[in-house]
Length: 126
Image 1 (cartoon, rainbow, N blue to C red):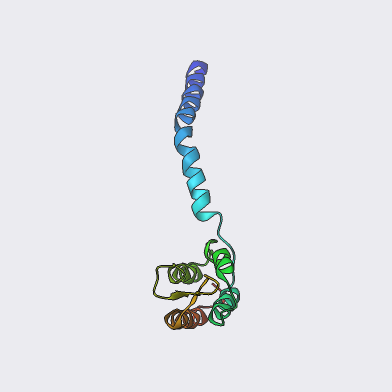
Image 2: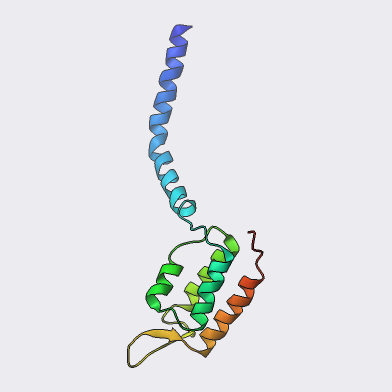
């Protein structure tokens, strides 16, 4: 019986060693996908959107908002939509000839206003 118990323990260790090359990358990917999301409230996203609408936020501030996923999927969807709006080749931006910076054009402002309305409809407790 002792020999069978030892063989069983050895097989468990061998199986674990064989599975480690698979387990570790899966854990890393899971951490990257699900572990680094910000716990941002609806009011914070609404504030960012309203500041975008009033053109208070420059491209660097946009990047800070756009590059950190949000735990709440509805709010994160709004963040992702902002990312689409903020693409230089989108129809939502124009480039300032004087400064060379991008800014929201009228179409971009209308889209941000639409996102503000969507954000206002999201339940605060989510």
